[in-house]
Length: 429
Image (cartoon, rainbow, N blue to C red; front, side):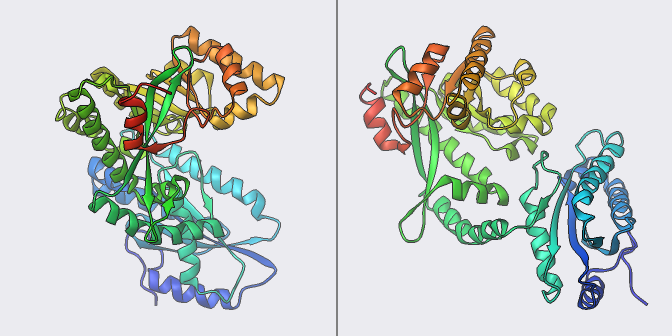
């Protein structure tokens, strides 16, 4: 007789491994099999706010829903709030079943919204399609977990399918995390800055702080490689704090030296906003430097506002009330809503470089850009156009009403020492 998990009634992990291995060894090749792995976002927070009893009820409900599906062969709870299940479908059924899985999760979260109103009930789910019946079940579970972890905290994606690209990201994580931790410990993370230029004034009007890593061979690791790794692991918080402190110190130096200080923008990852003391922690650190908040701008990507917007907007309002500027980065990258502009407590909209380039390729796109810039100007929102690379692009968006620009036409991101020499010690583009 099998021992079962006392809370959920599902198999214990070891029993699941044994039974799933036997089942797949005899599986019907004409059927379609997937392994689904799911858990809750911020489950520790749920336990802390509502108590362990309420958390246990949530786990039990999740287990009941996922294990009760007719396609579920068997399921288990490996630990805590984590549930995995092996499912069998007809070969032509899976495509439509993906929509069923999405709706299943949405319905589950909606049903528990009222009971857990102080937080957002959200599931992180990874799916691995089983196409090799000789593969170890533990390897299949690992793949589903890689997919599950890839969407942790991302409220816009219902679930993730395992792909080789995700595997490569995982491998990059194992390689890059030690490099990052060593650089962090030795104060060797490179801080770069890219200027923002006022076309009207013909000079710098701000800057964005960016970072680079050096690998063990002395090569620079591009941010599009290491930032996703740090976001996936949660270590992007350490990076953001490193940059924040570095920028505060640098502004303090410029003020003490009597320089004409420009506002520097610092990226804030969405993960920050799940920390209750975010605003207090930032202000506590900032006040060590005795500088004006006018010199600091925090950038938040547009997609963040579609995930627990009330929680995020509350913190942003507090940062603005203190005196910091707030900008929305990558606006137009995929989620834009004109309705959103009217409710966001922000000062600056940064139009995404891809949005700019795609829109300037045709008349309809140019009309959209022109209309958007006009609306933003009418509601007295500052605008920055990113990714400007040619004088023609500059001319068009300037004629449309945008004065502040950023891109390779003016300068690429450069080491902070070079930035100082070029823009702070000498006021020239």
